[in-house]
Length: 115
Image (tube, rainbow, N blue to C red; front, side, top):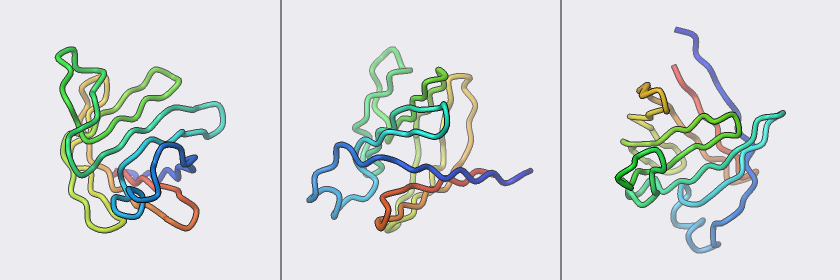
């Protein structure tokens, strides 16, 4: 399978300095690349993000909601420092895949890699 790497340049939005220092993957970011934009909400440390796709109001580790109508929820994750292994990511079509996420504190960007 082709390896796809997506570099997300995210605007720092809703993270307080204390939580940013302690929990790298917690907060809300804006995604903008070309004509595609959206919102990324993360709390990879506990299931505290509301999964808008689930009618029962279930919580998940994070969501990706894009302007083209695509929506993803993070259901299983392992975090180690500035790297996260997203073990189960679901999309609106109920597809299931894995991703790797690396946070770069210098430019506050997140790089996502999928197989």
